[in-house]
Image (cartoon, rainbow, N blue to C red; front, top):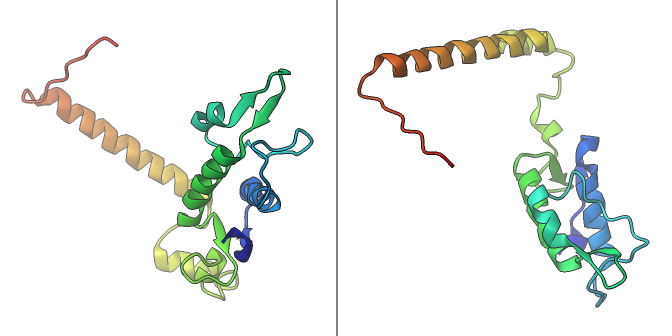
Length: 159
């Protein structure tokens, strides 16, 4: 099924996942348990750290090998996550389409008008600092509420 889907991304940070899919496609139909030592198997930016110990095995010569089946499962999980948040998209798909198409076609031309309609500043730093301040104030209020509420009690258990 992977051979029929054309995966894309608009951010180079997600390119390793697409490269991993291409490597899986190249090995389709082969009976090898491991990828060849000469292959550059994308790990960083593709595989969650908790999966690494299940993927990388050491052979009798002390060489590290990547188990194909486990790698494929890990890559598919990573792909699923990235498809859901549109970091990776599928050419010609509807649900998993290019997120750039979700923006108004005149977005760049009328960016200021769109931001004014949303009542948000054009300056990203100002936008983020306002959100951070709101979060700090809300957390302080929550913390203060815990301190003043005698019905709330926290028990600490040593690990």
